[in-house]
Image (tube, rainbow, N blue to C red):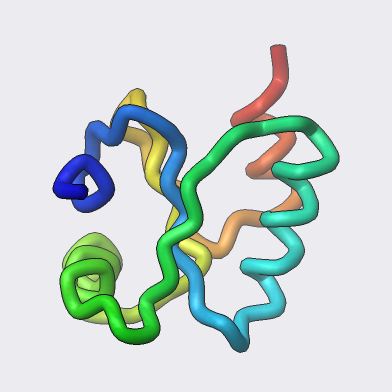
Amino acid sequence: MSHLYTLKPTQIVMYVTESCADCVRVKKYFEAKGIPYVRVGLEGDEQATQFVTQLNRGFRSVPTIVFPDGSVLVEPSWDELNKKFMN
């Protein structure tokens, strides 16, 4: 599944941890809007952890969301999410 660890994934990829409240918030946002995405948990996935840490200059910041257009949102606010998905 190397397409999950790239800045050009084939679909939206959200990197999360089990104890992350912001991850739950963004998950609910995606589900309410009908936005398809792939969830990748960092626990037990060394490749995902390294990828997220590399993207975030050494920090394991979640949620880290990578979009097919190459853009990345890290711990996005409601405003950032709404701007990204405005039609």
